Every structure is written in C-alpha cells, then in structure tokens.
Length: 306
Image 1 (spheres, rainbow, N blue to C red):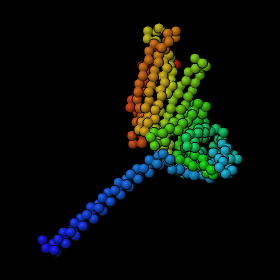
Image 2: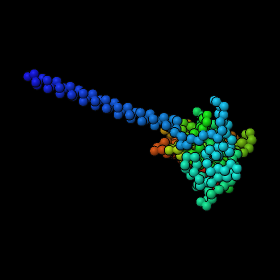
Image 3: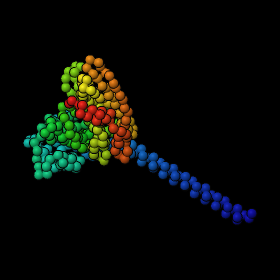
Image 4: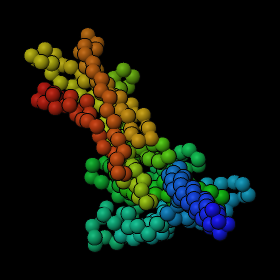
C-alpha cells in the first residue's frame, strides 16, 4: 500500500473514532438529562413548589416562629378578608390568584360575614400544616371553606396547594400522608354517640390529591360504620359493624375491610373480610372494587332498622 493510502486510512480511522466518541458523549448527556429531569420531578413531589409566599404581618425573635392568630391566617390566605368587619368577598381571589370560594356563594353575593375562630389547623411532618377556613355554614350542620397545605418559616408563609372542603367541624381531622414521593391530604369525618361498650361511630375518609397547586377529592371510603337490621325470619335484631384500615403506598391506597355481625346475647355470629385498593392512574385514584359496607347495605335492604 502506498504511503498516501496508508495516511488516508489512518485519517479516516481517527475521524471515525472521534465521531463514535462524540456520539457516546451525546448519548450519556441525554441519559443524564432524562435522569436529571426525573429526579427534579420527584423532588417537586417530595417538597412541592409554593403557589404563593406571604410575608408575615409581624416578626419574632431570631430563630423563633411567630404564633399567628386566627385573623392573620384568614388575611394571609384570603386577601379580601376585612379584619375590622370580619367579612370577605367570596368571589375574590385567594393568595394564589384562584377564586376558590366563588362556587360556595350565589353570584350576586360579594360580601359575607365570617367567624375567624372557625378554622381547623392540623400539624404535619416537616413543619407543614393543613388549614381549613370554615367560611360557609350549611343547613345540614356542615361547613365549607378554603382548604390549604401551608408551611410557616421565620418571616413568611408558604402555601403549596388550595381547594375547598365540606364537613362537620367538630368531627373532622386532617392528616398528611405520602404515596411514594407524592403528598396527599386525608380528611376523616367522625360522628360518634354513646359511651363505653355502647359507643358507636360513623366515620368516612376523603383523600385530596395535589396537582399544579390545586387540591381535589380523588377518593372517599368508609372506615367505621354500624347498622341494625332484623334477623332473617324476624328472629331478633342483628348489629352490623364495619371497620377499615388504610395503607398508603407509592401507587395505591390498600384497604383492609372487616365486617362483624353480632346478635344480642350471642356475640359475634358471623364475620367477613375484603381487601381492595384505590390505584393511582393518570392523576386519579381508581377503586379496584366496591366496598364491603356498600355490599352489606344492599343486602340488608328493607330489613335495615336505622
């Protein structure tokens, strides 16, 4: 082979190696970008980005946290709140620019009186809190109002998501749960009567998913229920007791349901169990099947006594 041909071959080989190296580098860079974007998305779920940040109306000593009054929570979340008149415009924007309360009042209403003390504040992990401002009293003894996930820092308040919640103020409690990296709010409403062994409760949980700063109810399920019904053949009265426990997982809420049937003087005469789940799909929680309690009520039909 001539010297010129050997030189050309070496040059082509060098260029090929360089091109392969550049291709590998580009591929690694793309892979890194995809992985980086995925990591950033997961981080946003773990520590959500605030949709509004409000400077606190007063300061505290260095390192201390300001103890906010009920009026201050209303003013920070709902800028239309008039502290002196204890009133607000339900059609106005909340701190995030959303008109979260607009659907709770008739369109012509631009001013309602509220009681600032009617709020629920539940502490959660990492300094976060669930806040429910009960602005609208309903005829069925429930209240509606702004629901928000917040965190208070040294000199300002971060708001991560807002929505509305309706429930019984005295029997409602909120907890912050994790589904993998995703934060969700669980609202449990409980109504109990009786004392000791005669205590009976009706309790239901609602799950709020958080997306683009909005809180939306994605699932509702019973966790404690009781009903009485006449025994088949009219031989006495049976009590049906239902309970459920929830396990929050990365892609689902796993429910374990239990039903106990009791007869006065005989104790438990029958029981049954069911496992089902609400699975996360396209930002929604989809039930894998019907609740054991729903099936039980359908079976009781006209025999039910309460």
